[in-house]
Amino acid sequence: MSHRFTRVVQDERCDMNNEIELSISCNDCVRRGTPDCDDCLVSFVLGGTPDELTMTSTDADVVQLFSAQGMIPRLKYHARSTTDDEVGGF
Image (cartoon, rainbow, N blue to C red):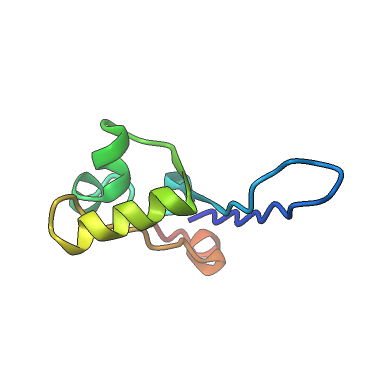
């Protein structure tokens, strides 16, 4: 998962919100193309063979609430380690 947490700080010179962005890259997930991928939050939201899902912190809060209630699948992302790439893993 390619987490990009970006905190935009409000400054007197600009009018920006304090917002965190979460980006999940399926290309970095060892479960891509497996049955877990088919039943993952990212596949549920994007359908088909997804590439990347980006959410704000507000989006993530809603997703967490719905997942906890069983209304949508949970995130099944598992990061590919550098050793997986080096030894021909997933």
